[in-house]
Image 1 (tube, one colour):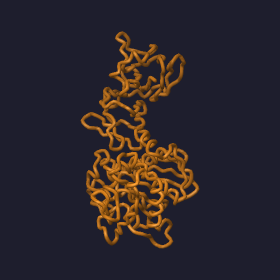
Image 2: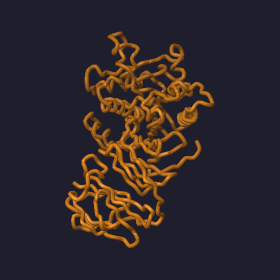
Image 3: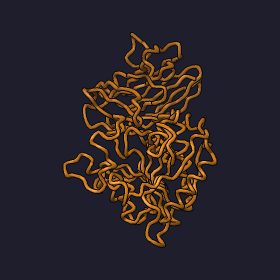
Image 4: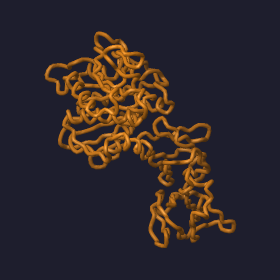
Length: 429
């Protein structure tokens, strides 16, 4: 893979390849590695939101977990299965001019990495699988609520090669924690080599034909909420980790209520290392965003964050969800700005790092810095071009200029002459 930037934090790293985001949570005790892939189909959010939670809320304490949260990013933005055709039918062969080719080639290389011991591909599928026909939703042709295998066994003595036994173990343990009786899981063996020509083109069959144990988890598209889909996906992944001896800690209790809260947390977006947006409860459109006319750097705290620029408007996505639209105001960016600013918050002076947020109960005052101009967006000061040194209360602010729907979060921008420097966010409690 070319053009890879690695950010290492002890046992945690993110590899941004040209087309595939690979998150590694590793330990030095073993090469045993579980690879989890989300988002091969853009209209199956249970898979890619599960992978994002796995990447952000799980700490792996022994052995290794690799995560590709958003394999088919362009299709995720469009909320379509595959805007260039079904990516999961391109693993046997793919044309050189296929827009998906680079992604498919890169994920193949990742699957074949010697450290990868087992692969789980995450999906949402139609209906509820039943061995006997019980109607249009509950039938043998449905895919929902299944642990899918291509065959029962890999070659003899292959570690984790007993695919059927592993899948049975996973589904039995999931079925101990059902949210509703009709949500029960089963094993679906496609017997790909003999019975399913379409599945012979799939990611999991590519893996097993290269002697890599591989499974698909399909949660039902007929489940009532995204949190239910993610609940079952995470239950399954935890069972695979248990089988592989991978230990972990998560920072939440695994239940539908907690997951619903996590799924509503879209995190933050930092632009050019000097501009911060809190994406939670953000307005549908924000105007006059001070950025460069080209080569802007967008950093999300959420692993499914993505920018799509169209006709001068920057659309902000988390997975398949359009969060907000940014209408820019182009500025030259000052390269010589302070790393922090002194702000008097409720009567106490504290240093605030650039491009960060602080909270205030009653009032705040930005202390001036020679050579820099302060612009508090939403505060009207007709006779002052520099709004440092002013005591600002929530009642002084115009809610039209808040970044959130509640009228509580506002921008404080710093300029050096005619160049944009950086900003802070203030949130009134």
